Length: 116
Image (tube, rainbow, N blue to C red):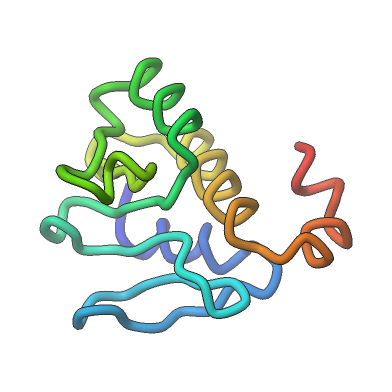
């Protein structure tokens, strides 16, 4: 997985836009960050999941995903190992993160995607 592929998958989600947060690329929906690149370094990304979603991904794929240390990780922020993650798994993780940050009305308009 490359940062460019991560970026492409994030921006394929409805109304997703790229911005910056602390000098690193981030991906937002409705102004809310659902993913970032380059944290803790260029070999990683981050998805903002719900804690139970984080538990599922980390439990199933501990080489691909790990909780962000500290309070952010306890709230669901999850590092993505770009060298290990595959496109199918990352697409699913990004969708979960997007769904958690998108307005309910937006998610409802894209129910087929959200329920996939």
